[in-house]
Image 1: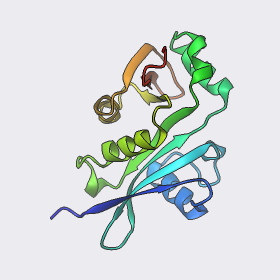
Image 2: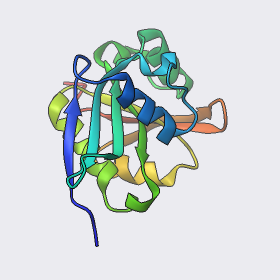
Image 3: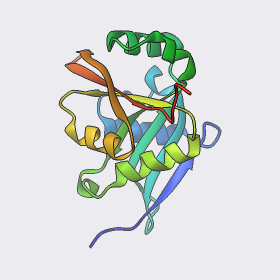
Length: 165
């Protein structure tokens, strides 16, 4: 029997260290006190309606412009786009028993609606096909060329809402 979930959006003034710790534990390679989570702008949680426990999360971040420029330059994409891009999506996690139910797609679509019409980018490991499917379903397009990340090659994705106009 599938559990029902409720989407909860938490803004910086409403999320707690417990939210951050949950993300860190589920994501696996982020420490709860990590500076990587300091740039979080919005947390979207899918919470089980029976107990309100989070079962999935996706985060929107506002990374430093230097980092965004580095990602776009590494992917051989024009740096002229960078000044129009503020948001990055990342740190997506779903508890194993709730995977393949569309929760990550639901959370990302909810965040996109919250930020519309702002462009959003994402970087993914080249081997992370599940996240590639989520990004594609949400209207992101691969841009540029794969480039070397810390563990493997990385792909840059963009949800533009007609950024060139």
